[in-house]
Length: 590
Image (cartoon, rainbow, N blue to C red; front, top):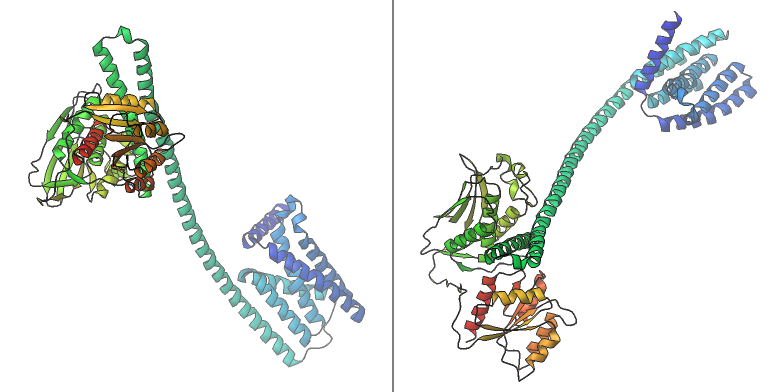
């Protein structure tokens, strides 16, 4: 054989051994320690008892091979690719070669017959069935060859029963070894297959989880970017406009001033709605959202929100609104008017945002067995079919609405929570021609015993002006209240601390106080502390108290109601809501 052919053959053998041996680290060390313990002791025994030099050479070679195997981790990297080949060489020399030589050298004695078959069993434990057959064939052949090369001769034929026992045992060991190693390989193959399947499923789940996390991260990043835009834009608007209005007040006529003030109000309302949305989502997720149910006029609520959106959100777009009111006579819609108005506002603002100019937005109500249906339909960009349900999830926007028009992905999810809290349902459908229609349902009742708790916020003709004591530590709140009450028959007394409020209430020279508007969070003395003192004093405990606060602590607010607070108005509150509350309290106490 040529040198190239020999190199190719060796290369193939090394490649084959590498495919057969994957990871035998523990076996390498275990067998090396076994060899280094067994062969030196056997070597000394054979040499000094029987003066057997041939076995001396063989066992010395086996010992050196095991020593090399023990320190295989220290091998140079270039030699480590031959480690599998070296492993098979160690097994061949240490087991079939030596046991075959000893068996022949000891005339098939019973002791070495057992020793030979023990060697066969060890090989079975170490390798697969194909490697087992190859190792035993090569090892036995080499063992016989060495025996005859050493010019050793069997002094006499062994007893017939020994020969029969040898071949019987050898046949049994080889046959059973082949069967068991094959079964072991099949078992290992099945185990590896199951392991691979489990790994595949695990990798699949990890990949899905990774995609989910990446989507969540992307949604979070997009949400934060949109939130930054949604917060900075109105702040930029009312900050620059208000500063310009103050610095150039004398240069503007009344029309210009009114227009700029309206823009400031629009941007402030936009920011307030955004912050309110975030707070509402937090309440819904914690299960702390409370509803104030009473009979409402749904047609009036729709008209009011359309007017509001036309003023605050339409901008330069020329969009036509069509409202088809439904005759609800005999039907009572029991709902939280503020929250239903919030849903209508969210739907209409979305319709405005994603509709082209010169398009139409239709709001209609109709009755079915399931309840009252309200539909907001636009002629905008629509929503992909597969995303019609997803757009109601928190912080989620349709792929078509990611157009730079802004948005936080909160409006529809909050609307869903509100409608579900009313026992209704909400969903979206794409129109046949263009745009999207969002529907929601509200339960209706036909009982005539349900009263209408609505109180119109219009000026009452009181016998005398009502005196309201307002306790707050923010000047802007005083200014806002003065504007709200400017055309109402109320006298407003303003104090910025709880101590000052108690001082006024205890002064008999001061006018009678008909109502107290009490802020909750103030320095030195909190609103709750002031309330406790008021309700413990016989001269002031009868005075109605309305808490005005930015707190969303439901437990605290419930506790305040239990202490005798007649109403709680959460900042930022609307003018109509405040006037409704004041008039209701006044009428109930006349």
